[in-house]
Length: 149
Picture 1 (cartoon, rainbow, N blue to C red):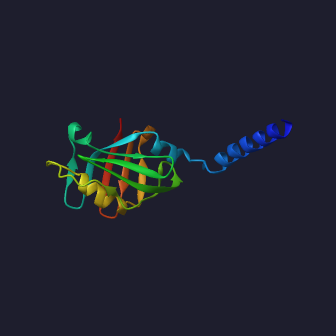
Picture 2 (picture 1 turned 45 degrees about the vertical axis):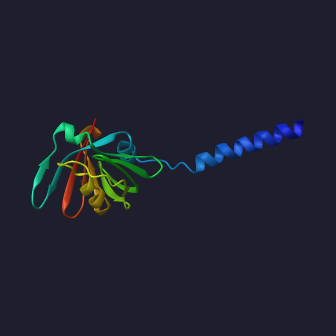
Picture 3 (picture 1 turned 45 degrees about the horizontal axis):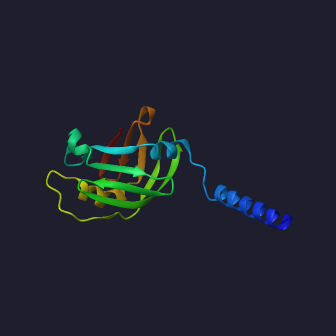
């Protein structure tokens, strides 16, 4: 019986230690990214600036997960990808989003889901606004503006 108790304690201790070792510590910026669902508010590129009405904004969102995945509402479709951030401090940093896997339903216009799925992997940096309530994702040609709700 004594040997069984020791074995049980040893196994439980190793599980606790393993879970601590595999959970990386997040920076304040990374915690801010995963703290909210981010709703698309604007798209700015060299050709135009698009402001989304609240009803349309609600259908386009990204949610960064602690495990390195990002889930997306792409209008009437859903998507997911992997993400990684390298914070520089002050609410800015490098950001990479992997290839977006998504459903392929045809959403009624206006829709920006296909554009998000195609262009988010080109994003190379982020900037959090004051108090972490807004987020800009930047690529070479486009700025996606998001707001937390």
